[in-house]
Image (tube, rainbow, N blue to C red; front, side):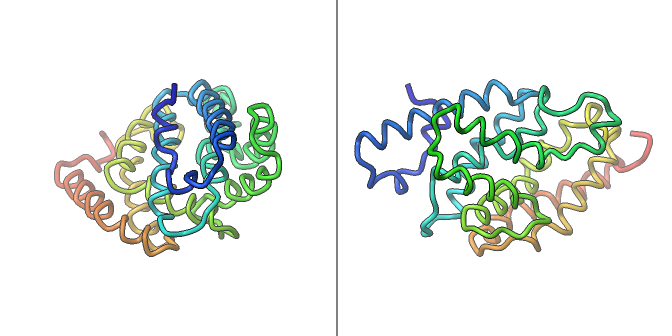
Length: 225
């Protein structure tokens, strides 16, 4: 049976497929989702992948992107940050290059799960440029990057950051998380490349701004918290 992530597949992108093509797409999509679900640890990390895919599809409405590429790139872009894939030694984790790891292992994961071989290079290119500091070279890369940037803003951005307090080397106490969110508020909206993403960012920016103001007013930004 289709899972929640499969329900997120854009009907616009697959409407023109023949029945065998659709069945094949569902097969490797379900296999990839199952792989990511099993490997996304801590558990809350899995929700980012289907949410990111849906958001990237929303950003890309009206454009002619390759939905298979976007689906696979959204699912596997963060493989290098999952427990079991990243180093557990804090000293090694500080210098860990999760992007280089993803680019190294993703081809094998895609091949093992029946993904079309001719689309793998495009998936890797989208993953390579998904960080805000990168410059995408493809439409799928632009959509993934803008969606991943949006995921760092608003209520979701707050949840994804504060859940790391005490278990991520970057966030020992509340002020560490608040400083990270403040940097996101100041820098990330300016990095969005599509008008659709900039439109989606506006309410997220307002939510994040209000949260940070409230946290400061309540004293959560003090070093002792």
